[in-house]
Length: 361
Ligand code: SF4
Image (tube, rainbow, N blue to C red):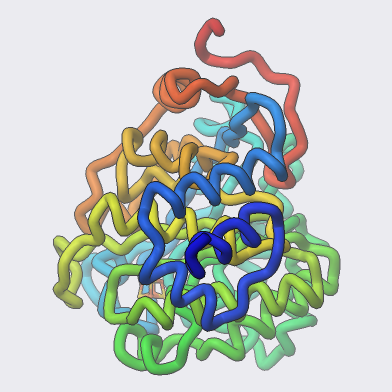
């Protein structure tokens, strides 16, 4: 057995890869062998024929942002004529639209808007909770949390405790990009650094708020830096066990100040597979169809993924960067079925949900 084959063999049965081994596997493994190992690991973790998805929406409540990431076509700087912030009623209308379609997860997420006091979020989350008690508020990036803390001169912990009391249940992993300082300085120099991202996640998880973890790849990072990102996440997960899932996605360079080449489908599959193998302490790997599209998202189910993400009924950040992909429940279910699996609706915390499927099995 070759050296790489024996590494894949070990990882496929749940053994841990070192950082150097992860880099080697990522660079050198044959894609089919890598995919087979990731699929074996996924099947070991999730035997049976289920693939989950969540009915959710993303509400981009403000595009005003003082961070100015170069990969972002969504934000407008403070004072810009095209800047907007939704009123609570406008957000609530969108929550209603989603809840009427069975959504249980609402992601309120936007720019780091220095004009918004913490009361904006407290009142909004309370109103959502009162009107839509079945909806989980899975919202705000680490950057937004830090922006609120700075504006209010509060600690991260106090911000999270205040927002949790208002109804914030969990945090999405947004804003991670690549957790390597060299990369962050090049693509988002004004954003919180990697240590701060980890700190916010650690505090949230310690407070009992589950979070997801993401990776936005395909900008200026090297292969080794992608593995370093996974390594940072794996280390924190060893400590907290607070991440529910990992969601790698690639950046769309079409309308953003940072130009580049869109990642290829093969690269996407390679990232999924190595993520499944390297993150031995993560339960779930999500095939995020928003940038690669549904067909490639479907293929991701053969490369280590056990979850198809969400319906994302409304989203602007990735769409404004040039992504044209959309999906409804029927399409998600059809793609899951045609990959040989049975679609199952879940909630934010990966609990099965008794809710009728959109399509007959
Ligand atoms: S990615 Fe987020 S933090 Fe960065 S500029 Fe866009 S809205 Fe602001």
